[in-house]
Length: 309
Image (cartoon, rainbow, N blue to C red):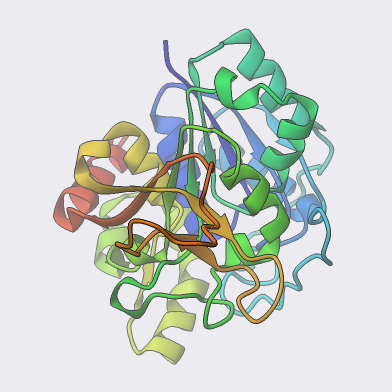
């Protein structure tokens, strides 16, 4: 059997990933974290999305802040102040059972059968690892949207070096990347290749996704001169079902936790056989997605979104 948990700081593009996870037929539950909004708001957002889609999956509330640093400040300029384009009155309760223990309990109960999709900061997973050090052996895999490695100039969207999900809690990301998870990282290098526009969104026939996307589209049109959006987080759900759409590069991954490269993800790019100070020595090898079949990815998303229409 295969089971799925999606860990999210649900904002606009996160909602596309959550919808695809719901449609997979393998979802156990949704865990929330801070990021695009506070964990109070993202918990309400997850509940609202599931209620709108008439899905009864349970939502579990997770971390409210990073392991070490201060929480990121949400100014709402991309996803809206509530994370979902500020277009819905959200009266859902933020109360929910504990996300960290839910992840651990599911991993123990369904050993080798649960895949975790992380589409926000990695704090929940790092905390779960602290509770259960054997977690990498219990989970089937982790598919995480985060990082940037410089392909076609995609080096970061928070600084010149760092992508948001990693930047929000690099200490958690470093703990996860240094652990022997079956980890696949989906960075900006690939997510910036998969763009959707209003025509694509309309083809999904989902009023909720169409409404929450308007704020994001306005941002893109104003600042990037393109009325469309990257569906960064949705690619985790696409990879989960169709890894053959993507090209995998294998390398250890390290994360900077200080200095001007704070929040940067690093992989092996040197061809030297021997490096005196090898930061990757004895670190586990993970999967990194730098390229993929954009046409196949977009066609699958459209096909999947229309399952119930």
